[in-house]
Length: 307
Image 1 (tube, one colour):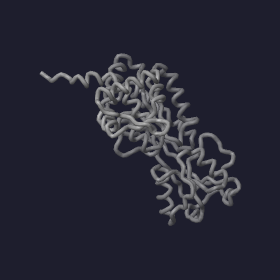
Image 2 (cartoon, rainbow, N blue to C red):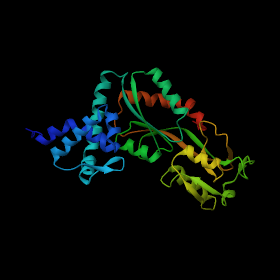
Image 3 (cartoon, rainbow, N blue to C red):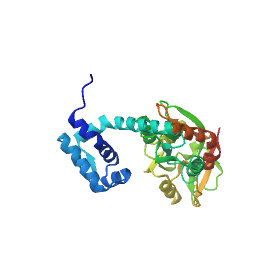
Image 4 (cartoon, one colour):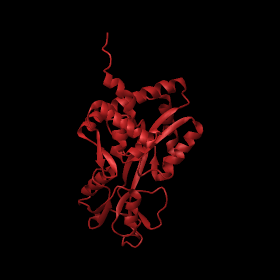
């Protein structure tokens, strides 16, 4: 006969959701909102976890909290268990009612104001009982959340090679300059002609930045990046203030202070729909099929070339 669970495990299991949410958010207020419980109730649950284990799991960090070494150890060893339990519950529930369920869906920072919301709005009209938990982040962050089970599906640019994916289309990259920039009157330009320009770009961890460095290297120069920023709209505003030029996808909403210039050698990125390495629930499969069929119409609005 299998051994019974220890008394500590029996005491901790009902509290692990509180620990998992707080560890992931790094903030008690946000974690309480995520769980839909009062902040005082969440704090009591966390204290109970610490008392049961006999170690401190959290410590103050600015306006939030951070995991101690013991807390990080517990989080690393339990978060996959929590994701697996969540997946198991979702599968059981959705198998009983395939028209409902939860889908955790991610999409990139370069898509959002128009294409993805309109796509999801149409999907919701066809499947109103399927709930969507949405995450918008840069590519590597989305890939990590797919790998560890925090996301079920994600539109990514490009798709990682280690995860199942289908191609939805291609995102064309253009040069953007301020209206007062000396190149603003050009319709096309060769990338090699930008060797003396100041660039504004994402940090090196972003795929678009790595492509910028690669494309410029092929053109025979290293880009002079004076400003690095993660947020694309702010990046475009810096370009509009004539602080530098940028290689970017076309914005989904017009930016009146920018001029778009076509590169003579087209620079594209593949848009993919990425899934995890686990059996999808019927709700996840339904959204996957819907996006695969309808992305041609919606994502094309962001300046892409579809399949």
